[in-house]
Amino acid sequence: MQHTDELVAWLSAHLDDYLRDLETLVRMDSYSPDRADVNRVVDWLEQRLRNMNFEVRRFPQAQLGDNLRADRQGSGKGRVLLLGHSDTVFPHGTTAQRPMTMRDDKILGPGTCDMKAGLLAGIYAAAALDAIGFSDYERLSFLIVSDEEIDERTSIPLIRETCREFDAVFTLEAARENGDIVVERKGARSFTAEAFGHAAHSGVEPEKGRNAIVALAHQILALERLNDLPNGISVNVGVVEGGRMRNIVPDYACIRFEMRAYTQADLDRVTQQILDLFERETVPGVPFKVSYIQTSPPMPRTPAIAALEQAAISIAAELGFALKGARTGGVADVAFAAEGGVPALDGLGPVGGLDHGPDEYILKSSIVPRTALLARLIVTIADRTTRQP
Image (cartoon, rainbow, N blue to C red):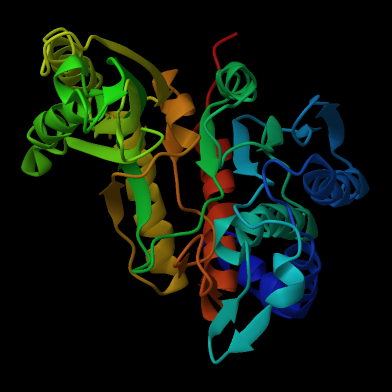
């Protein structure tokens, strides 16, 4: 129970402050492509962390919002990184239409769950540790990136490089709706496949055409058959484009799809199956071109992650609630820490759900206990870590 009661008492006394800060952040639109809006959130976070005596470095971006790193040295051992993102999926003007509101225990608003409440949980966990006089870590840091919600990212090298410096990484995404934290995630690859046919008049001489849409239609069905949900492999065609007019045999079509799996071996194996599919013709005379990027590596539940999970379960029991670690098909930046061998946990913000939709929420009753859990995990890393000279 070391520090637990003191942390809970301080966080309970400052819950109203947290809620005021949350309303301030939610009021700021921060749509990923809107650099000016995202940077208003980054400005607020930068000033708040400076006021808490963090040394803050800002990484300007030409097209997107800036990335932010904040570090503070302690007097002990253990390097802990709190990882989050400042962007949301909601365009400018959304918060004016749907300001933060309270509905019984739910706090609703764009970005409450994903992930402004989590960013504040990190800030208030650090402030609570300050309030009880705990600084027995070697370093406590934040890394807040601005492009988590989009595919074309610039922050991934920064995430990879930064995570390698730390003994543990805690991601400030919300806990699952049932309260679970996340200890295992799928990796994801994003594909584009193009078909190149030949145009012709669909009524006068259709036999002279080569239908690119039909060629890709066969491939869409073949991709669907690669799904193996019991073994965690999912393939989804999300975008289909092609053709100009109904009376032209289409000479071009394109699909965009993704594949996800829990292991790198499965990602590689199914990727090869996909590439093999596009080596064959489905309509004579219509070749394909396929490309892909890995948008996120898998996050496997390693022994080190399992040990952190057990520590979180024990701390939660001290705080009076049950906790479990879960696997999920979603991707998150925490995977880049796990990819580098750094122990990591995800879902350490307040409990919430319905991300990216009009009813996105967090539970008010979860703010204090979940923030106390995060603070106690920082203490645990400091207590456990012994560095070799």
